[in-house]
Length: 91
Image (tube, rainbow, N blue to C red):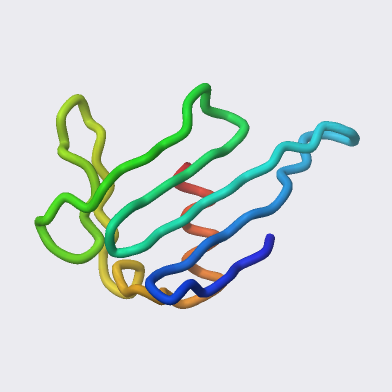
């Protein structure tokens, strides 16, 4: 997994290897303004704008479309690799 610090946030990308030959691209970007996740196990990508409820809150909550990051995960530059592993586990 490649983890890059952005001026405001972090971007992660890499390959998920399923079995011996199936490889799928995973991309994640988390900034104070947006949370974007594209991963092989969901039919659609996740794009949520900041909710305005505070740092680390994304989405409106309508139909369950929201994410709230807590503690150090809500920082613009969260600790690595813990944040990347948590995001992989969550999505």
